[in-house]
Amino acid sequence: MKILISSGRRPIKLASGPNMTPQRMVGEVRQAVGESTYDVVSVGYPGIVRRGKPVSEPRNLAPRWVGFNFQRAFGRPVKVINDAAMQALGSYKGGRLLFLGLGTGFGSALIVNGELIPMELGHLPYRKGRTYEEYVGKAGLKRLGRKRWRRHVVDVITSLTSALEIDDVVLGGGNAKLLDSLPRGVRRGSNANAFIGGVRLWQDGRASGPDARGRAR
Image (cartoon, rainbow, N blue to C red; front, side, top):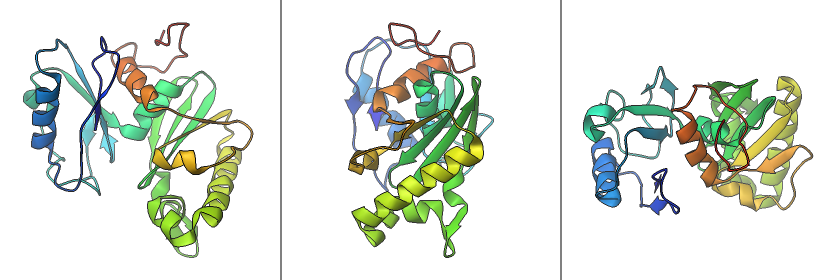
C-alpha cells in the first residue's frame, strides 16, 4: 500500500498481502498518518468498482471488501475508484488515453475527452482459451518467460490502440519496467500519478491536463 497526504512530499509504504482486510487497511493507514490533518480520502481499489463501491472481492487480498463502509471507518468523506482508473486519471493530458497496468493482473482504464471509463479488459479472451491477464499478467510472465511475454505485451498494446483509436498509452504496474523499449505513442506511468488522480477525484469530476505545477486544472 502507498499512502500520501496532499500536503506531504513522500508517500508512506506499508506491506500488504492475502491477509489484508479492509478493517486492517484502515487501521494501518490511520496509524501511519498519525495526527496529520486531512479532510477527504481517495481509495484506489484493486477490483471492480461501480457507483463508488467495490462489487467484487480482490484476488490478492483477504475478503470482506464488498459492502465495507469506508466513510464510517475513516470518519471522513471517501471516494473509491479502481486503482488502474486512478492512475489513468492522474496520467491524463488530453484526447483518448488508454492506461494498462502490468502487475499481478492486467489493469485497464480509458479516458475519452476527459470522461473516465474504468474497464476490465484483463478478463476478456485473448488466445488459446486464455485471457489477456493470463498472457501479460504475472502468471503469463512466469509461464512464457520474459522474451515471449514482451512480444505479447507489444501485441496487446498494438491491438487495443488500433481498436480503441487511442492517442496516448500509459503503462503502469511493477512489470512495466521489464520492457526495454516501448512502442511509439506509449509512455511509462508513475505511482505518483495515482496520487494526482486521487486529488483530481475531488476537483471537478473530470480528468484534465496538468498545469505547470503538476496539479489538475
